[in-house]
Image (tube, rainbow, N blue to C red; front, side, top):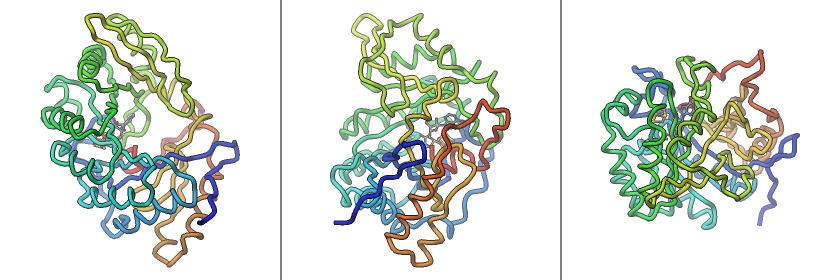
Length: 336
Ligand code: SAM
Ligand code: SF4
C-alpha cells in the first residue's frame, strides 16, 4: 500500500477532483469556445498515449487522493481509445466517480459501451433546444444527435445526467426557461454557466456576458425557484428546486464563475491532453509531467512533481483584477 499525499495548496484547499483532457480537437465550433475555422490542434507526438493517461490517473487516485475523474476536452468522444481508457481507469479503483463532459455527438453509439466500461455518469453541453439556434451557436446542424445521445445515456443508466448551458446575449438568453422546462420534463439536471474569458478568439467582454442574476430573473418569470438545502461545499453550482406547476418539478443550478467566484472552495486540478498539470482554469503557468514521464520518472517522482504543481495555486482567478490576463490556452485545450 503506497502512502497518499493530498494535493494541498498554500490556502489549505485540497484537490480531489481531476479533469483530464483527452484531446483538444472538437467536432463542433461553439462561438464562445472556438473560431469557425477551428484551431491548430496539438501534434500527435505531444499527446499523452492511452497508457500514459491511465498511468497518471492511477497515480492521482492511488498516491494523491483523487476521488473523482472527469474526462473532457476538446471533445472526449472523438478520442478513439476512450472506452478502453475508462475501463482501465475503472480497474484502478472501483469506487472513484468517473464521468465524461461531452457535446453529445456520438453518445448515442457510445453510451452503452461507456456504461459497460464502468463510467458513472455524463455531463452533456446543450445551450438550446431550437435547431436554428443550435446551428448558430455551434456552427453545425447537429441538435438531433445530442438529443439522441441524451436518450441513449439515460437508457444506459449514465445518470444523473447533467446538462451544461451557456447563455449568450441576443442569441439564446431568451430561451433559458424553455431549456429548463425541456430538461426538467426529461429528468436532466440543467446548470447554467456564466461565460468565461477562455475563448480562443478573445471575444469575451464582461458587458456582453449574461450574468447569473439575469438568468435568475428570466427563470423566475416562469418558475418558482427555492434554494436547495444541501450545502454547496466545493460544488460550483448554486442549486434550486424548480416548480413550474403542472408536475414540472426538478432542480436547476447556476454557476456564477465570474460574478460570484467559488475559488475559495475549489477542489479541482486539471491535466491537459499534452500532459501538463494546471492547478486552475485561469493559471498562467503549467507543470510538465509528460517530459518527466517520457524520461523515465518513477510514479513517486511524478506524484511529487504533481504535489509541487498544486502548492503554487493562486487564491482566485482574478478576472476582476485590472492586471488580469486571459491564459494563452483556450478552454478547448485546457479541458473544461
Ligand atoms: N466538448 C465538450 C463539451 O462541450 O461538453 C467538453 C469540453 S467543453 C470545453 C466543456 C464545457 O466548457 C462545456 O460545457 C462548454 O459549454 C464550456 N465552455 C466552453 N467555453 C466556455 C466559456 N468561454 N465560458 C464558459 N463555459 C465554456
Ligand atoms: Fe467543442 Fe465543447 Fe468547445 Fe463546443 S464547448 S467547441 S463542443 S470543446
